[in-house]
Every structure is written in C-alpha cells, then in structure tokens.
Length: 398
Image (cartoon, rainbow, N blue to C red; front, side):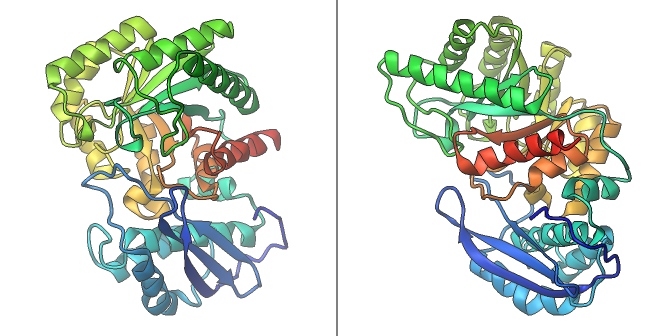
C-alpha cells in the first residue's frame, strides 16, 4: 500500500471500483479503489460509528453507496487529474447537492475522497501523511508525533455492561509511539489480571476494551490506577474519559460532580463529550469549573464541522476537538477542521470509529496534520493495532 513507484504527476482517474466488505463488528461497510491511468491504484476501507452525532454527514446503505459510486461518481470523475484534493472534493459535494451528503452518502463520498488521496500520494511518490500535509499547506515533518489514546475499559453503547460512560482511556507520556504502545500493553495485561482476580467476567466491548460490570462509574479508574501502581508507572500515564453523554441519563449537576471527582481523585486530563451534542453552554460551564488542567473535548458536539467548531469557540465550550473524517465526508473538510482547531490553539485528536477496518489512514492523517493525539481503541484488536503500528512505522522512518 505504501510502496514507492515512479513519479507521475499527470496521472488521471481511470476507474473507481467499490465493494461491500465487513467491519470489525461484522457489519457491512465499503471499500473503494481509485485506479489511475498509469497503473497505480489507491484503496481504502471506510469505518462507521455506533454512537453517531445527529449533525454528522449521513451514510447510505453500503449496497446503495456502491451503486452510487458506479453509476454516478465514477462516470463524472473519470479523467480527473491527481493531486487536486480540494477540486475533487468540491466535485463530489456538487454531485451530491445536499448539506449532509445524504443523497450519495458520506460513506461513498469519503471512500472516493480518501482513495483519491492515496492514489495521488502514490502518483507523487510520497507517503500518505506527506500528501495530507501538503493539503494542509505544510511541508516537511511536523514537530511532534501524536500521543496515543488507548481504550482499556469500555462502557455505554459500546459494551453490554452497567457503565454509563463509553471509554476509559490511558494516554502514555513517552518519547516514542513504540514505547507508549509497549506501556499500554503492560497496563492492559495487568488490568486483565486484576479483573480476573476480582472475579469479574471478562468481556470485551466494540473497541476491544474490557467490559465487565463495575460497582460504579469510578471503579474503572480505581482499577487502572492500581494497575499503574503495580507496574510502577506513576507519573507516566494521563487518564481520559469519553463520556459519550448523548446516551447518558444522569442529571447535569451530578455529571458536573462526577467529572470533578474524577479530576480530583484520578487526575483526569482528557474529557470527551461530557454532555449531549447541543449543550454548548453546559460544556462551557464545565470547562470553567475544571480549568485548564482538563482538556474538555467535542466529538458529537463538533462533528469535524467548521461551523460547529466556530460555534463552540463562540461559547468557549471546549479546548479540544475530535476529528473523524467520516463525520464530515471528505479529506478537504477534515483538514479544514483540523486547521481551524489548531489556529484556535485547541488539542486535536484524530479518532477511529467503533466499527473499524484494516485501513490505517487515520494514522497518516494524525501525523501529517500535526495532531496532538491518535485515538484508535485497544491494540488487542487487529483493526485498532494496525493504526498504532502505522504510526510507529512513520515515526521510525524519520
């Protein structure tokens, strides 16, 4: 997929082929291959979420997406030259003609947009992260490597247990991705041992995290804290929580207290979607209460959309943002959202979805855009591990 070949900047789209494949949950999604007239081809596989925001771009049924690519998108784009990402994405959005990409489907549009990006990188004889960096308007390597945000314990809609919150995250503090990944594995293994010793039934959530029942919403951090102490890793791990509060039935005042306790008792550093997707003011009040020590982050709140990012800025709701290309539907719009968030001085985390594939493009996007983090689930699942391994590969190639 990353093999270098001869440079051909004048290559043009010759074919766009799509098919239905299975994601990590065994559900249908699509892969897309953009073939060029120089014989090169870039292929991507599109992820999909379970806890999706109401303001996300809309998917269509995978079979319909494949049909739309074959009958509408390919005839229109055949002959289109490479390395014009903005132009390609504008053509796709024009073909769709809706604000939420609901006619052709965000899955169809993103599939073509990403496969085109991968083909263009091949035609330019550069890595995908370098191509993303060019679209961002940058050159050379970024000055940092994203930290990894690793899901160890699952709850909420991603697990069949009694936890209200969706993801309990560890974020290693390390000099390299490889070292961070090794640290994450140690904590995951120690956590598993402790859960077994406590008599809990070891189940896994959608993203590969442990998903037994717990006494309350604090116990996962208690277990993780103990695992870190056992491994003598104190001071080398930050904690994060994706509350995914759209699906949480807890009063606002109680949520404020829970998050504050997590900060005080466990040093919570990263907090994603603490309230539902339209609660800009509630986010703002919480950010003020927790202070700058906690990165309050929007996911369903902002959905990789510049307009909602700007609305969040107007309310001073957050200091961090999740980037998921399939929330918005094109490479260009994803990169515009990253640029806007970085200009605002926010923490930027590029994220996977709960229904993942063996594609690793988000690692290239995270690195190439200079993002602060890559959130890809538990490395115990092959669809998640491949993202972390790609980041290690990019870093080691320096």
